[in-house]
Each structure stands twice: as C-alpha cells, then as structure tokens.
Amino acid sequence: MDIFEQEMSKPTIFQDRNVLSPHYIPDHLPYRENEITKMQKLLAPALSNKRPSNLFIYGKTGTGKTCCTKHTLERMMEVKEKYNAQVDSVYINCRMNNSRYQVLLKIAQHAWPNESFMGHPANYLREKILKYAGKGVILVIALDEVDKVKDLDELMYTLTRSNDDLDKGHIALIGISNDATFKDKLDPRSKSTLWGEEMVYPPYNAEQLQAILEERCLEGFKKGSVGDGTIAIASAYSAKESGDARYALRLMLKAGEMADEENRTVAERDVMAARNAVEEDIVLELINTLPDHQSLVLYAIATQEGTGRNTRLSGDGVSYLFSGEVYVGYEGVCRKWGMPARSARWFREYLNELEMMGLIITHISGKGIRGNTRLIKLAFPADKVRNAVEKRFA
Image 1 (cartoon, one colour):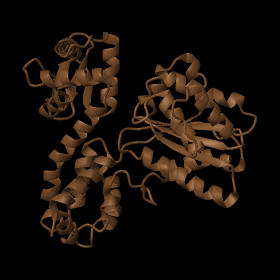
Image 2 (cartoon, helix red, strand yellow; image 1 turned 30 degrees about the vertical axis):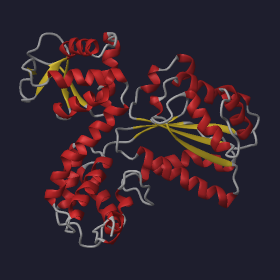
Image 3 (cartoon, rainbow, N blue to C red; image 1 turned 90 degrees about the horizontal axis):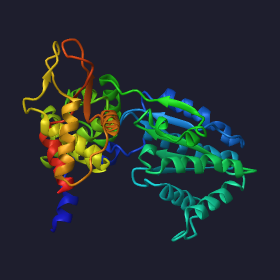
Image 4 (tube, rainbow, N blue to C red; image 1 turned 135 degrees about the horizontal axis):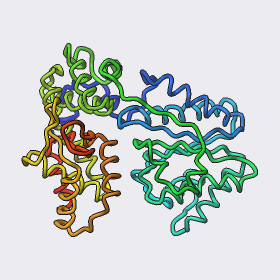
C-alpha cells in the first residue's frame, strides 16, 4: 500500500476532527446565548422589510465574535425562506480582502454571481451593489477584522452613504474588530455615518472553556478517547492565555493528533506537549499578518528582553522594558532592515494594537519610577517572536 492507503486504513481516535477546528460553526454556542439573542433582535426588522441598525462587535481573539455572527446570519437566512423575505447577507474576511476595492468586489460577486467584474473600477462595483439592493433587498454585510482595511475611511463612507441613493432596499453593516477604538481613528466625515449598536464579547473563563471543549470533544473524538482531567488542564491553560476558545480548540486538536499517532487515549501530557507547538503556530500566524512596523516594534521588544536593560517593578517581580528604550530599539531595527522609522505617536498606536492582539503586556509605571512611563513585556517567549519576525523579513 502507498502512504494514502496506509493513512486511510489505520485506526484513529477521531470521530470528526473538523468539529475541533476553530472555523467550525456549531448549532449551540455555550455562554454566548445572550449575545446571539441581541444580534437576532437587531437583525429581525430586516425580515419585515425594515431597516436594521448597523452593529459593531468588539472583543479579543477567540471570544466567539466570528462564530456568533456566522451562526446568526445562517439562522436569518433560514428564517428568510420561511417568510419569503427580501433579505440577503454576505460575510467578508477583511484580513484577506483588505482594501475598499476588494471588499466591494466580494459584495458585487455575491450579488451577481454569474457576471464577471474583472477590470471594472470601484464606482462600477458600487453601482452594481446599489442595483442589487435597489430591488428591495435588505443586504447585511459582515466585515470581519474590519480595521484591517487599508482605506477604511473610503470604504465606510461608500457603504453607509450608498443608502442615500436607495429608494428601496438597504445596506446594513456588521463590523467585527479586536480593536474597540478603531472608529476613533476614522476621518470625522466617515465616523459620522457609522451610527449603530455596539457589543463587547468578554473572554471566556476556565469553567466556560471546559464546557465548550467538552461539547466539541464529545463530537470530535470517539468515546473513551480523552483521558480524565485532560480537558480541564487544556481549559486552564487557555483561560490563562486571555480566555481564547480558538487556542483551547487548537490545543485539544494538536494533543489529539499526538495521541492519534500512537492510537491511544489523549492524556494530560499530550496537552502540555502541544502547548509549545500551538504557541509557535499562533505567534507565526499573527506576526505574518501584522503590518510591517508593528512587526518591527515587536522585534525591538524581543531583542531587548533579558538584556539587563529591563526595569523591575516593585512588588510583582516581573521585568518590563521602558517604552523609551523600546522606541530607540525600534529605530535601530528600522535601520537594520532599511525602513524609515515612524513617529513616537505612531509607535504608541502600534503598542496599543499589539496589546489588543495579546502579543504584549503593558503597565503604567508607579511608585519608585520617576514620572509616568509605559512599561512593556512580551506575552510570548522572546526567541519565538524573534525567529518569526526574522523569517518574515529574511
């Protein structure tokens, strides 16, 4: 037998490994019932041909924002068939489609799947979207990681002001972001059009993560394939990592793969061994999708940690770096890779964004340190961060 035949014929502890994927949308989303109910109430008017409010959803990675949005939109489309409502929805990942043109193209392709839009300008795409909505369609557009759109001002203004040109139909937005302050960075002209409701998804605690993992593992693994205490320890680790359900699922999947190689029960030692591999994957994945200068700031922090230039905060026993030192290091890193350094104001923005993504931890200096300065520490091992950035810029 060749490798394919061997892999297909060997025994496995998995029942359906897709269930353990962070991209799987389950029928039941534990501890997000209130959020889903609120989303459904906000979108329900669309089923009666009334204009729903825009909605903006915030929360750290792995708090269920994407899952709940997709679940809600799927349910809305099911109910639409029952009532023959003029409603449609489109989900767009803005990390993958990170310009106004790409977003408009995805919407136009969804609205007119049999047409080719190759080579057409953005204004033509906008007109096609308006023509579709103008048939009386309430079009709900979900923009995941909306803050990653490079020309976000232009996109927001284009979509929201398009409703002024519609006699029938409506375009409603669902914006999803890790950054609760992203609207503050918009031009006042664009910001003024973004009225709507807001929701914040809190991180999961260890108990909630355990319930989520238990449900997924029941479907994902064959009966008796997960040892006692294994899910609890995976939940505890994940709760420590900012309550990230994606991290928890990746941890269980990786641990399961390790146990599956030997066709044995998933044990606590597999979860512990899986941590390094999962953390490295996550760091590499995050860094590869960061803007260049955020990566360079992160590299500056990673190269300075443990060099003896750290300051120790009294009481907590944790070493941090002064933000001023990091900025000087960032300027040096920019010179190394032949890129002009940005201003201190932009540097502070980069720190905010890196903290929002859970890549760094910051703290305002307190008693014993002259003046108020920002103190910085990596949330992941420095060597892993350095290796990931060096691979990117090599």
